[in-house]
Amino acid sequence: MSRDSDVQLPGDEALPGTLPENLRAELIAFRRDLHMHPELGNQEFRTTAAIKARLEKAGLAPRVLDTGTGLICDVGTRDDSTAPMLALRADIDALPIPDTKSGVPYRSTVPDRAHACGHDIHTTSVLGAGLVLADLDRRGLLPNPVRLIFQPAEEVLPGGAPDTILSGALEGVGRIIGVHCDPKVDVGRIGLRVGAITSACDRLEVSLDGPGGHTARPHLTTDLVTAAAKVATEVPALLARRVDARAGLAVTWGRLEAGHACNVIPQHAELSGTVRCLELAAWREAPDLVHAAIDEVAGMHGAKTVINYVRGVPPVVNDAAMIDLLATAMTARRGSCAIEDTEQSLGGEDFSWYLENVPGAMARLGVRTPGDTARLDLHRGDFDADEEAITVAVELFTASALLEKTRTSF
Image 1 (cartoon, rainbow, N blue to C red):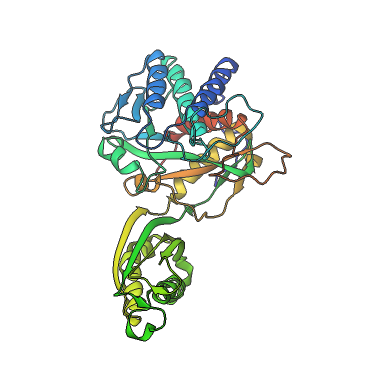
Image 2: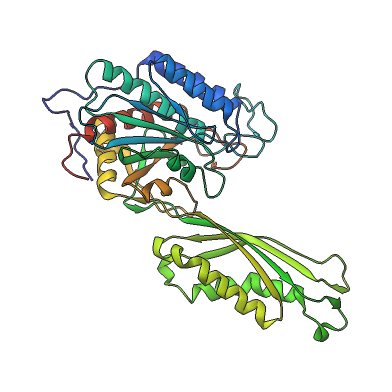
């Protein structure tokens, strides 16, 4: 990765595009408004309207996606219509959990809804970058046009990215970058990793059936509770011996239900959980492997199976050249000390679907206030972010857009 501390534009011009103080204050207010009015995936009508109105106020022409929520917007014009654009992606949806924060004026006003994953930070950052880049374009300082992608439904498998792509979000795009809030990283810093930075995540639902019977005579029927228990414990162990351990294929159950009486062997049992995988190749094989393992274990106990394997998202696999771009951009803004390595997460992110089409990279955006010892995590009702992260992300995005055309190859 580039770590030069004095990165400049051609002609020795200092890198423009820092965030003006008045816009910084506006973006914080915008983020807080989103935080107070969270909307679930494919229901982000208010959020979409707010983004659209602000972009139009800046003289831009956003287009709402075919799905009715989310939008894309180009900043700048292309001298060469065939030159691919850099895209900046944000996700705009919230989670179906209550906001349990106290002592903040921007707590969610919607029951059982919260921006507990930082999507309001992502959205505000891409919006802010778009506004800064639009100003640079008017001044003739934007070397290449940029596409803003505000994507709905990231939290809904298989994510809103596939529908966003079908709406034309990647037409004319050659590269894409994004950020994801990380409460383990101090604000002012980003975490970068070449290769897989998230894991694949699929949903698995299994129904087991048998004739039922009396617990006094399990030998005359299918002992369905035992069969379900064996599937729950033996399938993960069996899969661990059928793929390379380095692939990280793991089945973890979140629900098991069977029976209603202590002396009745039930006729029906259900299990549901997730399938996670570190490696892309193993993820492609996972459905067949999981089906075979479940049928094998359940069959030994005489249980009939119905398996619903719901494809989720592949791993986010960061392109090395795009990670180098992000490193160069962050170094230009805040110095090489603002960059740290990050580990691969077991969480899923539908940003991966874009990377099935174009090279790109996702950075971990620090949102922890320096010195804060609280161990907060994503998807918790008390999650919050240091709002200085908005400034950091805007400057990272704008520097990437300004430096992108000066690089020789991707």
